[in-house]
Structure formats: structure tokens, C-alpha cells
Length: 464
Image 1 (cartoon, rainbow, N blue to C red):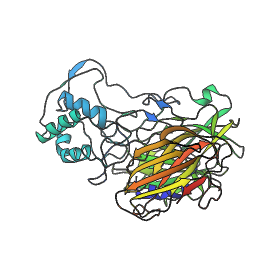
Image 2 (image 1 turned 30 degrees about the horizontal axis):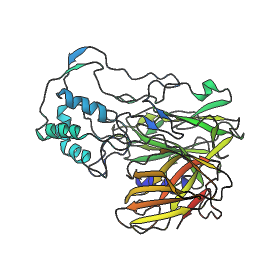
Image 3 (image 1 turned 60 degrees about the vertical axis):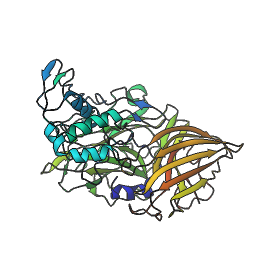
Image 4 (image 1 turned 90 degrees about the vertical axis):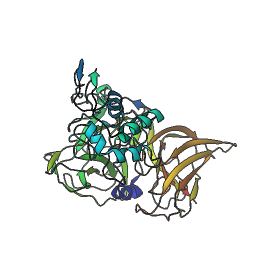
């Protein structure tokens, strides 16, 4: 995650649904690209696991399988190496690198050229490739790739059968729309209406021209398309228009009005706003449980889009998100609550949340957030009657910050202790070189995990 994104996260997480933020690509030797590979299914809020994308809900076609039959390939890769790269790398490192990847890995020559980088990343426990939540290569797979690269990645002949080419859930060549291919809530519930919030040059909805500025962050503003009526968000679907230049996007919602159709470079912070959706390669649709709606503030929306245009010229894009809302209020309204601590500058830091709930609180998901020195997070529910339950126990990688399904119920009198572990003691702050210790927990009812005194933001339950 970039320094811009880390700054955005500090004031903004009060209602979070991150859509399976996975990891892929390699932008440079040191940090590599940070989002998804392999098209693995994503664990979404509410515990739903969706398959890889097929056709979009608006009619986008699924990528071609490349034909069937048996024919020799001309990529120079042995069959076993070719199959491994297709499974674990092709979503971003396809024939045309997409989603921020800097190079292709579809030929023996490309593997030979980038061999040292490949071997370093597959062996790096702190910044592995593929990155979570995608599975690491097995020992046999690592041995296969290591032997091939150390042997000079010689040209071989493979006879391909079946699907033939590589590609990911969004194809290998650039444009496409991601979606689960199933029925949207709008098709099954007449009270639900869906709206597209995508990158645009103006309210005329003309495509935005992406400049060649490296790591460009552009923010697009939208007035609520449903006007002033009260709604709840029930689903989101990513819309991917130009995969060659798009890296990831985040959608914020706040109480303040925005200038509809305006856009500008992002400063990285979104005060008094909530992150309500996000996408990176590997991300999938989000659908709330049928009795749950996510609170939507009355103000406007900002779509923060991270571009990495290496085409050498301006490139049009209209990527973004389809949001589906209902004006038929669902009985359980969810929101994101802040667990953790600001008392840092130590290798292990803990904070205990003492919520003032008067009834049960249902937790749906957990989203750990630290910075560069963060290594591990746990959140434990301390039961009032004795004993503990582990809510989350996960290693942390700043480059791959994802949401986990963590269903649990917090009863009256229970507390929650969040513990963060760091490589180096670092003081609290919003810069990448500072540190944080937050677990953003999506739960209902909204405010159920808030403490009596909330100093920094709504639904705060951080401790010391």
C-alpha cells in the first residue's frame, strides 16, 4: 500500500468493506506491486466466499478461454513451469501486464530476465509473492521454479491442451468488468437500486484521461444519486474499465456535500469520511446478509483511484464501482468500529476496548491496519463470565491489507484486547514511517462497540 493510501486510512475508516484485497505484480525491486494474483476467491464481509469473476452483471463478457485442442506453444516454457506461472502469476503478469505489474511472465525470455526478482519474492516471508490471501507456492513449486531459473530458464517445447492461454478474471489485455456473474440484489429485491460511480472527466460521464504520472492518485466526487432519502448500502460490484492503467480504488462517503463531477489529485486524507468499498486485483463483489444494511452518510462520495500508466500516452478510463442501496431499512444496520491503541513506540502494543453495549453485538469482519513495521495482530474477546475467544490472529503485511471474515458475538460485559507486534518500536502517527494499531471491525448495531468517551472518531473503542 502506498504512503498516500496509508494517510487516507487514518481518518477514514468508520464503515469499511474491502473486497478481498489480494496481491500481484512487481513495480520495482524493493516493494513490488501490492495487489492480487491468481484469481483466488475472496473472503467477504459476512463470511461469503465468491468464485472468480465471470461475466459482469451489466453484460460484460467473460474472457475467452483461448480455445481447446492440442497445439505446440511458442513461449519457450516447459509445461510444468508454464502451468505454475499461469496459476499464480498470470492475472497481473500476463501477455500485457496489468494492475501495476511492471513486466510479463509468459515466456522463457521474460522469466530469465526477471529471474532474480522472482526467486527473491517467492522466498520472502515478509513480502511474499503471491501475497495473502493467495496461497504461497508449495515447496515443490518453489523448487521447480528455482531449478528452472538457476538453470538459465532454457527454451523448451510444450504441447498445450485445454484452455491454452493465460489470463485472469479480468482478461489479459486491458479492459473488462469484474463481477460474480450472479443475480444482483436489484434483480431479486424490488426495493434495491444500483448506481455506477466511475472515473469521469465531468458530470457528462466522459471517460477520464489518465496521465503518465507514476503512481497517480485522482479523486472523483459524486453527489448521492438517490438524493436526500435515507438508504442503506447492501452490495457493491467493481467495474474495471482499463486494467492496463488501474492499480486499485477506494470509495469514501461522508457527511459533507461535494461538488458533483469535480475531480483532482488526492491529498491522501479524507477527514470525517468512511471507507465503504475498495477493490484491487482479486477483489470480488460484496453482498451484505439479507438482514443487514451498511449505514450510508447523507453527504457525498469520493472515489480515490490509484493509477500507474506505463503506456507512454494518456489513457481513457471509467473504472469504479456499482453500489446498490435500499430505502427499505433492514433491521440490522452495520458500521465499522475502531479497536486497538494509539499508545505505541514499543515492539508489542495492546489496547483494550470496554464497550458500553446494552445488548449483543454481532461482528462480521476484521480489517487489521498497521504500517511498515507491523508484523502481526491479534484481537481477543475477553468473556465477562471467564475465558477468551480469539477473534483474529493474523500476520500483517503493509503491502497487502485485507479484510477477514470473523463472525462472533460480543455480549454485555465482554471486552476486546487488540495486540500489535512490530519489527521496530515506532511512535504513533499517520505517516508511513509512523505506526498504527487498528482493527477495523464491521459489526451491528452501529455503535455497539463504542466506548463511553470517544476522543478521535465515531465508534471508537481504542484503549491504552
